[in-house]
Length: 125
Image (cartoon, rainbow, N blue to C red):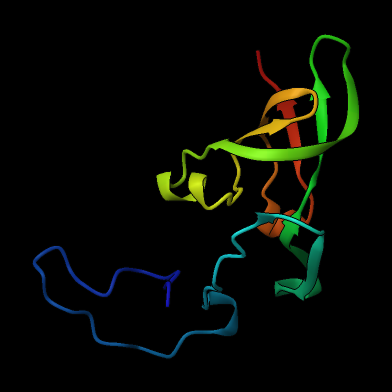
């Protein structure tokens, strides 16, 4: 599990004594690994009663064209490059910063699909 608190070890390499167990808000969750396919979203209640939307798969993106300054809903064809992990490219997994091929051309994802539940992207030359 991913811990979201201080390190378990000191600079010297010694271990800190555990003062308490993790709170529910400190427990990490497994990544959603958003793929290309039919849209599947799950709603999560998070700290403070807020909502996050886990996007497991989708084949559409809201693409912004900087020249015309207009948004359009476009079909995603494939993942071209993913700077988060080189193995995500061949598995067609989308995260923030991923370059995708759309019907309008190549676009960079600006949203976090695993947290926001949709894909927003900006066309690149």
